[in-house]
Image 1: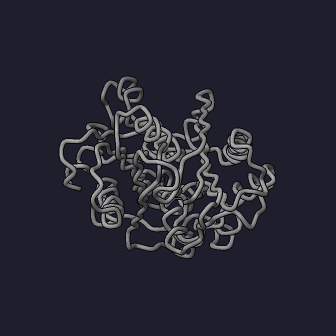
Image 2: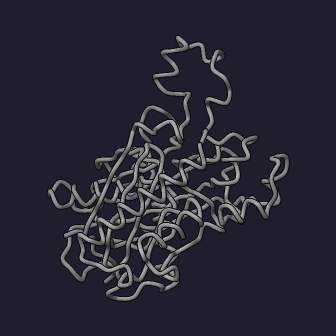
Length: 330
């Protein structure tokens, strides 16, 4: 059995409103909010990096869950400080966790769901007893400041969760069921083309020969919307069937905060009452792997969860990748 025993989050202090970000982008604050549900987001500044954010998010969990000997740290991010090495060992060192196992995963906006499944597997296999999973992103640094399609959407921040091996009724929540999927044939719908081995090999290390735009994210927004609604609906439905949960029996639908209209469409397609849909995208935008743990932390801090509540968590992102898990709150 795997139990959730700690949650935390952290965001940079720099707030960027729709009014500020729309300048020079041939868009308007009203258009951004109507299409995405976003009113503002947080950006890194003054050299703040993903590892820095991850440390802050991790500290917020450790402050609340003292006395647990963490033996594994997973960092879910698509905006790493460096292509090599992974950031997780540095995060573990800065958190004074000792020489524990630590590694990164890159599943974009699905990173926290994938990371939760990995944590659950490590714990159930007996490989780990306590796993700290951190989703952290400084993704604004990967977005073209001149691209009206992507620039208003993304924000920076971190969220973290601590999982342990324990019996039912312990901790905050009990993990119940998972569903994961991917479709690499559509990887080009949402991607950063430059910086990896493919571009380096093609250009024979002549980085000057690579167009500047290739170092930033590009996205086919319409296709991504269609895929996100379809894949999250299918995945969420499979988990509900596995748990024998009806849509009406779910108290909280915690979807990845990419676009309010996507979440509304998934709720409609699955039959989950719209009032059960959790939202904080208006304040933070799309923070990729950080969005779900940060939202779970916010809901927990506001006492939104009650004993016995059924929680459905679902995400979709680049890869293409998607996943859903179910949890019962204790």
